[in-house]
Amino acid sequence: MIQKTALLVFVLSFGVQADIAVIVNPANANVVSADDLNRLFLGRASSFADGSKATPLNLSEGQVARDEFDSKVLNRSSAQLKAYWSKLVFTGKGTPPKEMADDAAVKAAVAADPNAISYISSGSVDGTVKVVTTF
Image (cartoon, rainbow, N blue to C red; front, side):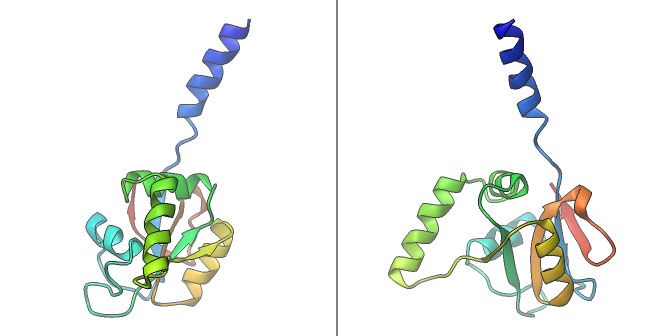
């Protein structure tokens, strides 16, 4: 019985992964690549391809979509990103993206700011934001 339960938990844990939708304000006409996302969310770029300011927003730590984004897009674990940003903040060379509590907070912030870019679970997308890519 214990083995079956452990196997079920193991199998279901792989189903937790969600599709991530990268979102921008509907007024934003920029095309955004995975490389662009990497540069924006690691503080290596601060503007979109057209030269307009970009404001990346993160979900708070522990959110499934954040873990997926960090892994699939930034190719780093949350611990690696925490160390990366700690070093940049300590040396005065960077500030991590602002964190939002959940998908609803991210959508509201992106809908209100034409410069914002973020990500949410694909199932949370609605007409207030525009999807530029999914992972």
